[in-house]
Image 1 (tube, rainbow, N blue to C red):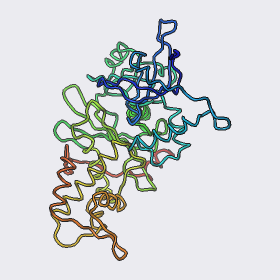
Image 2 (cartoon, rainbow, N blue to C red):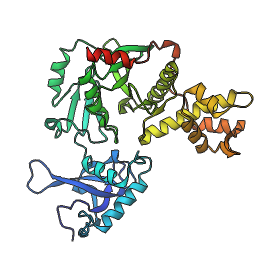
Image 3 (cartoon, rainbow, N blue to C red):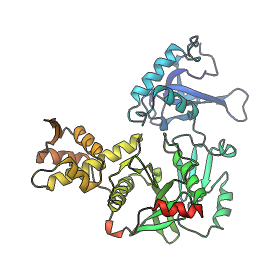
Image 4 (tube, rainbow, N blue to C red):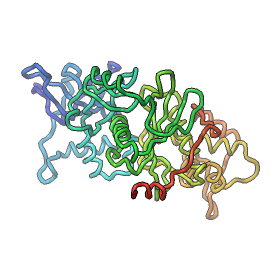
Length: 397
């Protein structure tokens, strides 16, 4: 006999959107508004990325598969042996979630704090998007199931009529920065986190809804934001962005990157990655993305590194070294080596790395990594590297 309501940490099968049942774990529960004893449950599907977590009704469960939570073991923070085992299993099964740089304690704390999505949907421009992760919006917004964003200044509202009233007052129909690239209907704007703090903080709130391990919310002064827009007669509409530190001691040329879900599968993510390296070429500095990379970020970067490196190897004559490849691409040597190792195209012999690139192997890997997406035209970039000293003098007055 199954006791209702179901307890948090119960394991059972739950019906997903494809109509099939999958092993799941109840993370949280809440009463349904207007009912006395009816609950809905927030579940995590094992072997699925956390972005798939969702609230479901009781009828979505196969109650014949219920495995109740075990009583906590003494002296272990209230967690049971089964819970500890399940946590370890979940972490090992959810591959590529960007967890690699987190120790188990950090990961548990992160997942406890962000375990339940606080905003379920957003409206931005003509698109409604389901969110993926928790974002630390101000307290008065955290219980809203849906938020409405102004697509120009990214101010957010609880109600659509509030957003529309605000929209009628907006004068600036593009991000509050400098346009540094335009090609057709695609533009890139550089926005200084110190000069447009509210916009950049709102962009971070928005981005955190779709990025798991993002920690930049308020401290935007030290970052530049490169916002990609589709332009039409109504203005410039943000489709994605990447950020980078104004002065990175570790040589990072990108801190966070996001293409909004409504604009994915158009090659925009590849464009943003490529654009970050074009800026590195102008700076004359080798660059690498900040870690940890999200699961989608890792796939995108590995594809980009593979495509660029193999196209160079395909057309090069004679020998070429890792340093040569780095000078040509501004990729960090570690990223070049790891990419070629992933492709089984590099060996370590007599104290140095030797690239083994047979033409048919290069062609096969190029076919697998797909197209270049929307390509950057470097001749259309009008940009000067950030001058930290000049900015410091301005701040000091």
